[in-house]
Structure formats: C-alpha cells, structure tokens
Image 1 (cartoon, rainbow, N blue to C red):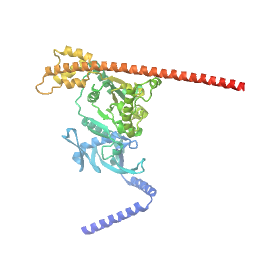
Image 2 (image 1 turned 30 degrees about the vertical axis):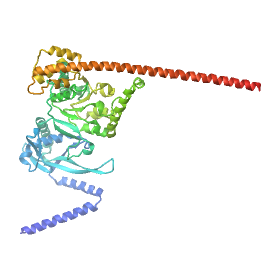
Image 3 (image 1 turned 90 degrees about the vertical axis):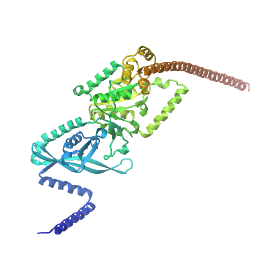
Image 4 (image 1 turned 90 degrees about the horizontal axis):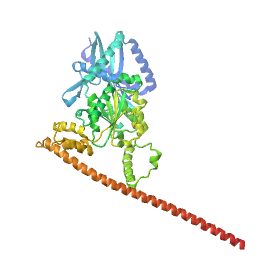
Length: 525
C-alpha cells in the first residue's frame, strides 16, 4: 500500500514528464503536422467517448454578427447559475438596484430535462489575428457555450431540449429586457473584453406622444403608422420587402426632432442606436456596425446633413450654372472646411451608406426603424431620402396653437386661459420653436404661477414678431442690394464685352489698312 508521500511523488513525476513532452512536441513538431495529429486524436476520442458535444459561438458569420442563440442560452442558464455554479459574473441591472448573475468563464452547470442530465460549459478562447493595415497582430477573445450529453439521448436533445432552451431563453430576455441607448465605438476599441462595437447606457428618456408638442392629427397619423409597422411581419414578407421602415424628420432647430425619436422608442419599446458617422472609418466598418445591431431597435443618424459630405453630390446642370454672390460663396467655403475635417476621419460614401441601410446588407435582420434628422432637407441628396428608404417624411414645424396647448398642459397644468385667443393669433403670425415656448412657459421660481408664465409668453412672442419683421425688412434690403450689385456686375461685363469687341474690330480695320498701304507701296516699287 503506497503512502501519501509516494503518491505525491509519482504524481509530480508524471506531471513533470508530461510538461516536458508537451514542450518538446510544441517546439519541434511542425504546425501542419500537429494539426493532423490533433485532428486524428479528436477522431479517436470521438470513437471511444460516450458523450456528444455541441458548441454555440457568441458570434456567427465569421465574427460579423452576434448570435441570438448565444444570448438566449445565456438567459436560460442564468436561472440555474445563481443556485448551482461556483463562480458567477455579476452585471448591474436597471438603476443599479439589483444584480444579474450569470456563469463566469470556464464554469459549468448541470441541467435536467425529462429526467436526462446535461452539462453546459462556458468557455473563452484567446485568438490572435493579423492586422491588414500595418502587418501587426492583434489579440481578442471568442466566447462559446458547450453542451455535453450522453450519446444515447442525441435525438431527444437535438429535437426537443435545444428548442426548449432557445424558446425559454428568448422569453426570459424579453421579460428582463432593459431598453438601452447605444453609441458606436471607434474600430480601434473593438475588443471582446470591452463593449465591442457599441457602448450603451440604460434608456430612460421620459418623452411620450402625449407630451410631444405637435399637431394632434399628425401625431395620431405617426402612431398608427408605427402600430401598423410593428404588427406587419407577415405583410412585409408577403409583399417581398424587408421588415424595416425609414423616417425622415426635418424642420428648424428646436422643433422636437430628438424628442420625437424618444417618443417613438418609448411607444414601441425599442432600443436606440445613435450612429455617429464621423467616427466610422469606411463603408466596410459601417456594415459591420449595422450587422451588430438587434431587432426591435431604432437606428438614428441625427443632423445627417452635417455628419459627412453626403449632401448635394448629384447637382443638376442648372444649379451648377447659377451665379452666386460673394457672401454665399464664403459661407459655402466655410462649410466645406468643416466637412473636410470629418472626411479626414471617415471615408464613408453616399453609396456605402445607401447599401448599408437599404441594400443587400440590410437584409440580415428584421424589425428595425431607421431615422434621419436634418434642419435643411433641401441639402440632402434625393437618393438618400427617396420613398422606400425614408418611407415617411415628417415635418417638425414651428409651434402653433394646438402644440402650445400640449405644452401649457405639461408645464402649467392648465387647459384654458383668457389670453389663449391672443396667443393663438400671435403663434399663427410668428415662427417660434416649441423649445422656446416650453422654456418661456417653465416657471422660474416657486412664486411664478400660470398667469405670470402665460403673460411672459405673450410678451416674448410679440418681441419675436417684431424681430422677425425687422429681419424681413433687412433681408429685403439686402436682397435689393444684391440684385443691384448683380445688375451692375452684369452691365460691367457687357460693357467690357462691347469694348473688347470694338477693340478687335478697330484692330482688324487697322490691320486691313496697313495691308492695303503695303500692297500699294509694293505696286509703286
């Protein structure tokens, strides 16, 4: 009978010998030969093993797209992890008041289904890839789950258990889902151990359609359109269209475009992906970002006319031939300089953006809404906002009386006032943004009541009306001056043209006379 010391001695010798042999094998056996040896070793193990292993990767499609099955399995296993796993990962949930526990890397849990025991392993594998840009290698991680079960239960596991796990996992995900606001990371920060392609925070914006300052009829039309879209999976499939819808929100600053996005997200209970194009390196990176978004989401590009040089790329001949005054040229040059700064960082093109949101690559996921916002819709390329890409064009206009009543109810909790008639007249005659009206209606102290705020609004709108009148007069005067400069410039150009034509004519006559005199002189000689 061997004592404990002898057993430990044999064990240590065995481990040392194995490590020595493994080091020799790794160092001196060629890589291609090792791959053959490992390949047939796995086959031999498979012949004698009584267990079947199924691997579920975190990313599919060569790492381009996150696997929904992986997320469903993680949700399913989270219900067993807290009770059975020895090592757990704790993730903060909404408002950091609770923790969501899941399996840590290289951990395992058991599960029982119809009396059959199975094991789930949580694995992570370090990988090294060659960078295409500078020839340097970069490291990353790939996570995956491995399901292990006895081979005699193969049929039941594949046909019933896996379906059960995925179904339960998706239901758990929907129940526990906390809506989030995402922003894209630079490709230099795409690490698996970090947040990957997108960073996120909980989405808690309070805006709703009930608090949105907008014409009621237009508001109801948007809501009906959204409901029809959210229930239209079978309809879109029947007509052969992707289950996505585009919205173009346009209008002056302060008219509620961002608030409308939040109201749509809260109405449909969708996540929001705020895509910043200036940080996207090229078209290929843009595709990868959009592939990494999930269904039931809104992809937003705000102020798309300022994001990159995607505007006015297809001007008509008439527009190119139109004369512009010096002030307009200077303004355009300044805008081009600003756009060039964005172009130095990003090589996303108009065609690349169109293909990503509406081409073949957009067919990789369903139930998405794409929203563009702009203050200057006329600057956008027609191909970018045509129907079929931006299906619904929604004008976010200045605050009129119906929108004002919504704001008065939100901020002052009143539905009528003796000055409402005066306010209706002023708002119909004056362009004031809902943001300005809301700021004026907001009480500035506890002593201010609804009456004070309403009177302040009347005074503010009257001042805005007077400013607009003066601005219109100045604009008319400036327009007349520009027309006068343009007329004088045209007259000067015509005068120069006539003078040049006269000089050419005189020169021609003079040359003709000189030739005639020379001919006569030669004849005399």
